[in-house]
Image (cartoon, rainbow, N blue to C red):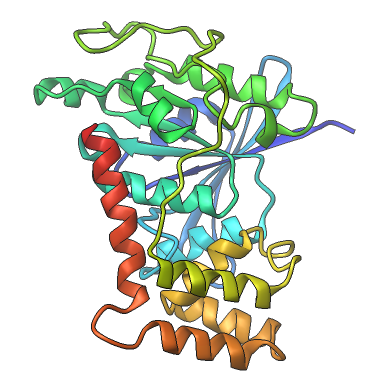
Length: 301
């Protein structure tokens, strides 16, 4: 049976997700509403390097703690459908606003390729993004791109081909920066940037960068992950830690989900959530603050 490699493109609105989807799938696309919603999801198939790639273009997603219908549909898709790799497209001019979602996706347990798009606009604004240094700081593979010109597409395809070739466990062999981050072909390196190739090593692989929360938050996460049990993420495709963090942020859909799926543990879960969010500095505020603080540190380094 043919092995189909599943890729989901995620990111905020207007960062170039649909442009990348077009480059990867060409005319082979089907647009339909996500079940139970009026939110459109684009699905397509790409063929290159002898592999078949099923690609989905998710609606705009700012955070896994969702507010809009589009965000809820994107998260529901990630929670319900198997995905081999997430391609997180970000606006290179606004990394500090984009990276909190990157950290959430990592905490959720997804293998993530970061595509820093709009590098032409970055340079026009007199800014620089060193994708090599960014990859080392994040502990994730990073590709620089100007997707409207097609720059970076070959490198993205090459990365996904290597992932598809990696013994059926794509999230293991390529998730860290053991592969060199890639500048888009045809783009000059410029000062402070280094031209790199997709097959060159960039140092020993390590795990991706994760946020460090305060003790109160980490204690609450530890209790909730224990209550969730070892198989909590099996059917929902999010890690126990991600579910715990969403629960502590009082995400309504997550609370409803755990109330129905963990009825025996729910009273204690509800107590932990309530206790953690009492006082002038509730955990539901501390979690996004920690994500944005880390994003600013990484973006400004």
